[in-house]
Image (cartoon, rainbow, N blue to C red; front, side):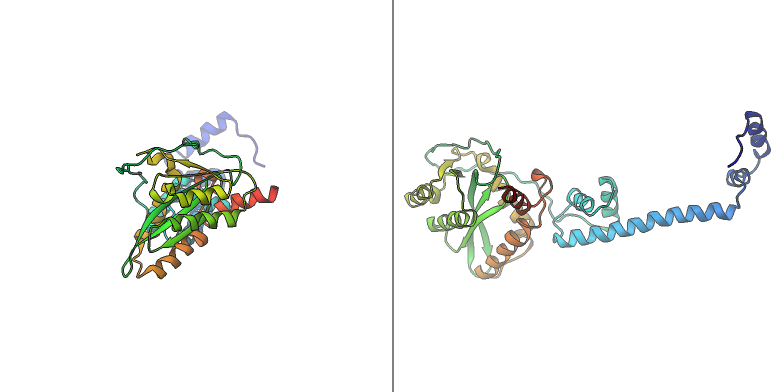
Length: 296
């Protein structure tokens, strides 16, 4: 241990080394060679460089695994899950340095329907809150284009608690049978034990007598968006917008079969089981559902 230096001794030391280079003076005061100082500085910088290289490698893997869909916030959360202590700004800086960026650019903005439809009961009334799975489901149809078969149609059903796509059906025609198949898929997969609400827009497929009979037979209450109010069903419309930006708009499907396979891989292989969601604590929909079922 070095003895405590008095103020007088300190002033004398400062006066002695005032004309020398600061680094040289510091080394002489600490009684260490200048080479030791520069070696320690080099080691500090190298450690930082090595850490940045490791972070960058992990970031590239996460980005690649997401098919370039993840931006800085989700990559940051995945790094923290892996045990890295790193700030969001550092992630953003390293991403910019190596040219990593999300392929997703535009935010979702629902459009207002101009179709003339008859009002129905809105039981959901934009209350998207839930306490568990199988309380509130939402459904909608979206268009998927293929080169050989033209427009095809995807009907999806989402559980509002887990954000999981629990049922879906894909077809070359937009019929009532399409939405019934998607609902049946959800019902068979989830096996709900209590009464629940299914919410949809006022499309003719959902307002048909065939669909009404199908939903009644399952003991489900049907809720409808108000005329011209896409925000009443914003959650499922948001999913379809994400699907388009992350998958559909990034490729061209040759035909119905290739689109069907790609949608299956996206929904089951990516969206439900691997894609983390900020609204559910940066977990996957499947993780949320599994945690609920484990406590049941």
